[in-house]
Length: 240
Image 1 (tube, rainbow, N blue to C red):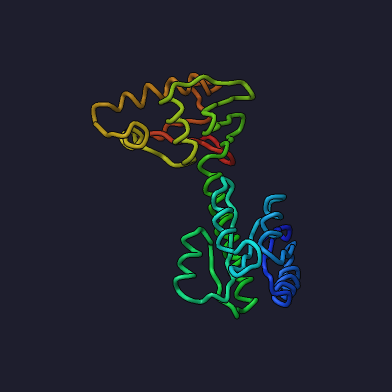
Image 2 (image 1 turned 45 degrees about the horizontal axis):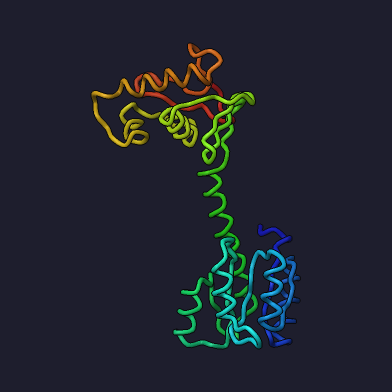
């Protein structure tokens, strides 16, 4: 379910449409503000952060296309849905090329707009989850791996790793519970696969165990899977 705290700015000069959108979006649990011209709308965008901008194109003052251009020049991403009486395909294409996430032609169904808003929020949340899965700190018991800072800590203590040791540990941690052969690890971490270099994996795993395991002879995190290779025991799993 989309959080009820989502903030939406509607920039619409038609007071009837603005009021209708405000009522219906608030009924859906969103926090809504209405700006009646482009200058007022841009000032509000400059003053605070919104989760979504619903933008008309034909506005007094600064027009909607210029607002869209201005918003897309910024580093922080601002979701935009254009609603416009300009129904020609060229306007739709231009709006989308300027960076709008969606485009609805007036007159439109409020229910369709709400459905598109919710679909857009779901896509954004899915992308955020994917980004977090790839770049967020990974925790497994007392072990913490930060992919951005390239830091590993164990019980709060920093663990110095070489580049390949870190990349190997990060690959394991991103695939908890999955067993990998030495050849597969060579291919994924070193970028090549050769039968004569499996000892490289063994030596790196031995060094990793010496650094992150309380007892390298009885590893908690990087375990041997007999007849296959190795696996990482992540959060919520028990060592075998």
